[in-house]
Image (cartoon, rainbow, N blue to C red; front, side, top):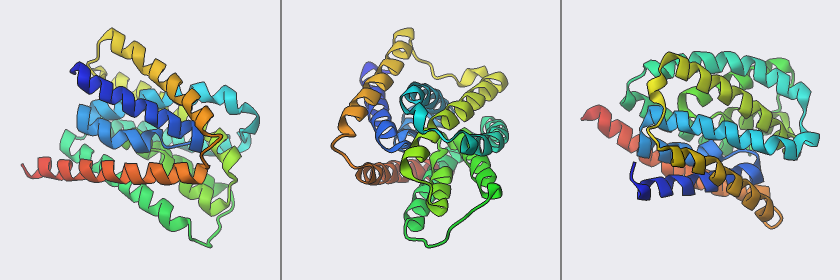
Length: 250
């Protein structure tokens, strides 16, 4: 990877971390389509998973008092099974179909989130939590994006923003760790070919994004932050989908 391209990757990571700190999610939605374009679907999604683990783990202590641990358990246990299955499937998929899958998952998730914001339907019970968790684990491992599934559940369950955003941090840390572990056990060659100094700068960029997000959160409403995430993610996913389809037809 050239230095100029790596600087672009760092910039995307900083913006993703800012969105994650302000809105509780958005890191993968923003970064996933672009990293897939830059690094390819296998290496790109794995790097997203790694960054997601680092970002969420760093945020956990800052939102600890707002975490709903009961909800965390109901979401996380099914999500682990989804993460394992999705990781195995993702490693075996060729690059072009996986790229299309990543883009399609992001677009479908974003569309569902927009539609559900106007829905009057309300879900209750533990079964819906388990379905949301399993779906998030599956899509996180295959596409690097687990947010849409739990966002849809949060909207339909009327889950308040503060505990929702806080609980997602340990949730993403766990399912991301499971995904990275399974993928590396199956195929260690998926690790992005980055220099040592590049790996050092990635967590530094995440920390910079988190602290910047904390400062900006005082002035930016989380609703506006989510809207910005959706717009940028739509553009990135649409571009990735077009490129993936072109590669399939080539």
